[in-house]
Length: 239
Image (cartoon, rainbow, N blue to C red):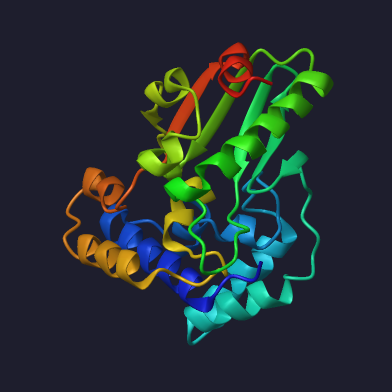
């Protein structure tokens, strides 16, 4: 997926708010409070000395328009292959192994544009996908003992109903997720463009930021972390 310039512009605007609030350099704000490092296909080490990041950071001080510079830099990196940790994908769902015992669930909307993937009409399809996914887990990840996930989507009842109650009930706000898509993904549609209404709400909130907690609360939805024993999933889906 190619992400829109508006998505990067939004993150830069957030970083500038961080700079004003915390009195830190813009480079540090972009590294620690946005998803830009990951979008440059640099992995998740967030190494300020990475040569590619240094090239980008050095250009910040030389560029007349850091919004334009950032997006041009991103476009030049779009052909770089990112390491994929996904083990299996079924429909809108996939999983990766955090370690031998922990299965992590991911979601991507692959439905046609006119179809809402989490509508009640599509719930049987989503459940069937998850049943197949956990059948794969059961046969291929015998050491797995629990399932975990982190996403803004766990705020939505339409997403919650796809999973066992115990898993949903475990939800806790995932702190310090400024670098990660489980937080920033709420601003995107399936094509990588921004969701205008959500972005406008976010910008309104940013204009009122007075302290760090305001910064955290400026996101319309928080990234939630959830976890439950894997047997609950086998039972729930009949895998």
